[in-house]
Length: 300
Image (cartoon, rainbow, N blue to C red; front, side, top):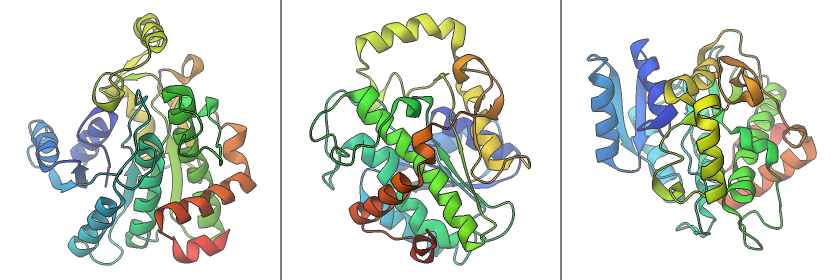
């Protein structure tokens, strides 16, 4: 199951997995978007096994409803792979979701946290099963501000709100592996970031009004340091499928500043390794979402 697979690196990852014969649940915010993505994949892989679904990670009711439908379609422990890929970037002004949470933190982190918790017991407890969380190189600039998680005190679209949400993803990915290890689970928690991949995340949707300085920097870097979405998807695919991927492994591009290139172990910022911070964020995430991992939450 891949979130955000209707465009960008998520779509490229879904296309490659479909080529390899995977059966993929492909949710999008609307049925039309999911069906369009599936049609584009089947244009290249006619016999692809794809299931359209509806999921809005910024709406916890939608997350619950989606997880319930998945459990009904595929009862028991039936999932091999969950890729938390969907996200929004640099929403120009502070917005609140229907649940009252800042949109980037809700979409990029709280929604995936809740979805992973709700689907966790549907994942096969066997070697090869993985939960992949897609973060960002910007996580290195992030800070978890527990007194400003919803950007209620101050809001900066990119370097505060977005960076915090993507750092939270990386903190979660690392803490999830610690708890899986403590519980003796063979499921791996791995992570990835795409480097500077050219996708609609930079140019469309809520992030279309990217600050001028960032757009200017992108124009300068784009010819030298960017890569297309297909190459941007390679770290995600490596984290999801490579036999060499390790428990808690985090992967990004090999080139300068991890902007482009083929997958290698990526830098993990010190904050993402802070166990006390991770445990506090986990507890706060369960409180905010109202969702618990059950026995896994007790494995801290």
